[in-house]
Length: 227
Image (cartoon, rainbow, N blue to C red; front, side, top):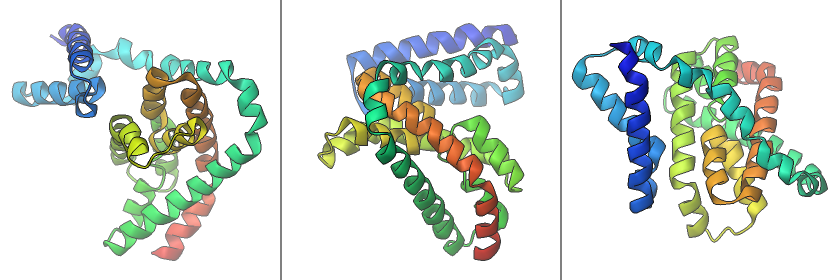
């Protein structure tokens, strides 16, 4: 039966894309609609995730090449990115540090323990790195992956609406915000909208992952101190 899950997933996503093209509402983003529909089907049919995952292994295999492909917009805008590299690296480092401190402090004051602080700390980077950092900090990698997906969804679904509301028109600013906060999903959405925004989002995604990995010892100290 597991062999049915791959064509089922592809059909659901295709129909979600058609729906979004007809009704271009952020809440009808194909990734979000597909996610909700697939989860509903699995729950109604009593199918567990390992069984579903077994049938969709080809899609999982393509995940890493897909993320690497997000670097293409960066390659096409490399000269422009080089000219602004210092502001870019500064923005990523400051953004990452502020994100760590704010999210972990809020969670602490809401009653979160050290393990939950370690779980939420790397939520803004791509899933494999976030899970590894969470594991090294004695967090819950599975929950971290969920938080990463939620962050990506929020950025890809509502990011451009928020930019419009705040009257942000800078392609660099939009790209950096999406890459730092919403990683691969935000970058994929930027690729649909504007290649320059996608280029800045790609480099922000990469630098955020590197920054988070390098900051892991500091995060461990901060968790110990705040707890």
